[in-house]
Image (cartoon, rainbow, N blue to C red):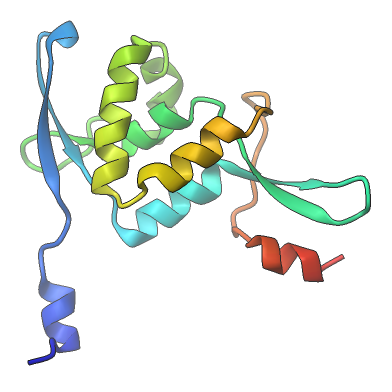
Length: 147
């Protein structure tokens, strides 16, 4: 029997995983992003840049991208976020190995997996910390038709 819209909307489908962080002396809870949160995160690490031929392209900005995800995914036992978005620079100063481990868990729980990670790692350019990004993400198809 197919699910109804009510059943889908009432389903508790956001995953939470405890992760031991011996470097920090304990355990943290990592929660996967909702669809809206994931879209906002991905839009925040993208930048639209002009190409020499006049068209535009979407590039991933690696500047602290892992910590920017983690501030959205680390929660307390009541499900409240531990960090505000503005805490990402401070969290990004923690040990890279720990940030990588937690990022991998957060990305997996958020359904981001390898695709976003490959984009982040594959982009050789990082914008300076103060750069802003578009609030409405566009696909490469959208960009190729708009000039």
